[in-house]
Structure formats: C-alpha cells, structure tokens
Length: 210
Image (tube, rainbow, N blue to C red; front, side, top):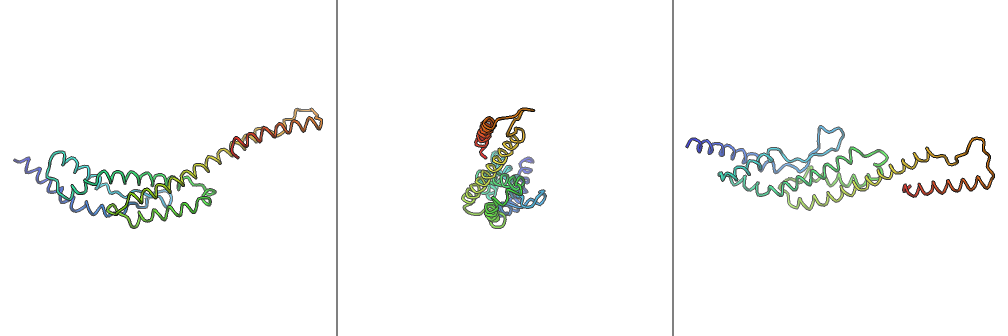
C-alpha cells in the first residue's frame, strides 16, 4: 500500500511537470543561433532537453502500465515524428555549420547567392516555425535539398583547387627543358625535345582537369 501511495505521488508530481513544460517546450522555434560558437551564424537544433526527458520517461511509465496523463500520451504519440525531424535538422545544421566554418574568402563570392538563399530559408525555422507547426517535413525536405546542393558545389570547388595545386607542384618539380650540362642542341633536336615535353605537360593538365 505504501509503495502504491508513493507511486501515485511520483506520477502526480510528474504529471504536473508534464502539463507545465510539455506543450510549452513544443512552442519553441525549431532552430536557434549558437551563442557560444566561434563564428557568427552557427546554428543549433532548439529541441529542449526537458522534452527528451519527458518522452523517455513517458515511454518507461507506459511500459509499466502506469497511469500516464493524457497530455504526456499525446506528446509521446509524436515521438517518432519528432525523432525524425530532429535528426533531419541535425543533418541540415551540421552540414551548413561546416560550410560556414570551412568556407574560404575566395570561395564566398562564387556561392554568396546560394548561401543568402539558405540563410533566408533557415530564418523561418529561427523566427516562425515551432514543433507544433504544420508541414514541417515539407520545409525540411526543401532546406535539405538546398544545403546538400551547396555542399556538393563547394566540395567540387575544393577538389578542383586541390587538383590544380597538385598539377602546379608537378610543374615546379619538372623543368620544361631538361638540359644536360655543357650540351648544345641543334634547332631540330631542341624543337623535338620541347614538343615532347609540352605534350607530356598537356597530358598532365588534361588529367588534372585544369
């Protein structure tokens, strides 16, 4: 009897906490700026840890066939949806934050328009959309597509720059004319050697995509 009374008291106290925080936390915007980040514009997913705790505790109480309040059951019915949405937001934010952190000054003008478009799209999640909003999944799919496209473009640019640098390093290491000390060349011999070396270099340029 004492255990049942204790269980009832615990559940009653927990139910009050659920009623006080559950719906309130779902009204938070999807994203927020990370004030502790090293550069401006870095974002974080704004899913309150108290909601994570609430969902976990609701699951355990339901497994124990406890008298879980309707408000907690209602939120828990969305558990899988919320898990998928926070997962997709983590991916979007992680990719975009990495873009901001690794973007070079010479690259920014090439993708400035796309970055501005994505930042404008993300503002909706920072200022308007919350966890109760409609069509969140459609919004996330749209933003995910834009962020992945930008990430692909930047990866291509960075790979192209790396290939160019590798080719230039090869040029530094290999002379256009490998002239042996003290040797003189006839015009035809010199021309033939130069054409051969030029052909080899052209081939390297083509292979390097430069």
